[in-house]
Amino acid sequence: MEKEVCNTLPYEKFVQKGAESLTDAELLAILLRTGPPPGEDAPAAYRECPALGLAQDVLALPVGAKKGLSGLGQLSVAQLKQVKGIGEVKAVRILCVTELAKRISLGLRETLVAFPDPASVARYCSPLFAGAAEGVEQVLLLLLDGKGGLLHERILSVGTVNSAPVSPREIFLQALKYQAVYFILLHNHPSGDVQPSREDAELTKRLAELGEMMQLLPLDHIIVSGREYFSFKEAGLL
Image 1 (tube, helix red, strand yellow):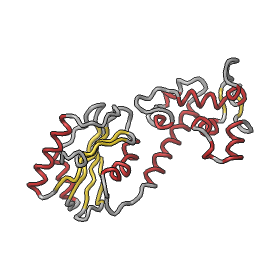
Image 2 (cartoon, rainbow, N blue to C red; image 1 turned 90 degrees about the vertical axis):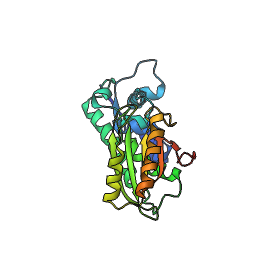
Image 3 (cartoon, rainbow, N blue to C red; image 1 turned 180 degrees about the vertical axis):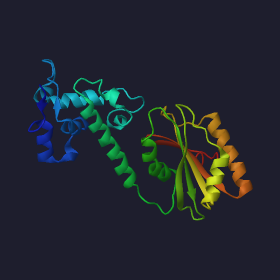
Image 4 (cartoon, rainbow, N blue to C red; image 1 turned 60 degrees about the horizontal axis):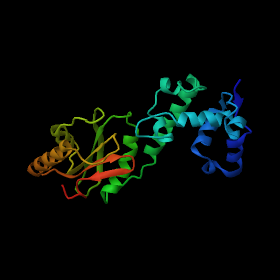
């Protein structure tokens, strides 16, 4: 028999101190509401609130480079159901909340007149990469006007764990379509290492050469992974 989490530790803490006082596990426990009876050797908090122990088990699931809450959106219903106490209803509830969080993050992105530096570009685009499937590279194109203002953003390619093919032709076709003057290319490294590969450097050099001929210049090529980024412009390579 599962025990209700209401009127136990996380719920009471929320009422008394607010949501910001709760740990990740406590927030998730309130969402889960119930959990299987913990063993006799479980911490006292888990015995009083089984959902808290269940939340910890969910957050401990292996999800590659991402850990805890940030990795939940990369899990499938089947993977979540491997945790004792997580059925289809709870698994779907967790994934719906992670999707809501992603959409809220996208909706709250600051609308920038222009990007003052590579760090602001990386911050603006990180929510888009946060939704990528675990271990998958994505390539994002930002098209800018003559003052550096954003005209259009587009995911150009979704690839594999270590590559996402992108064609310079597609980049310039999109740029011409939206009458862009500049563009910024971004892609993620699922490995967590933001250092550019040889292929990344070759693509950047090719785009710079073609852009000079077409008078449609790349302002930067940025590699992101979580909160880390590498800028070819900052590194003096563009």
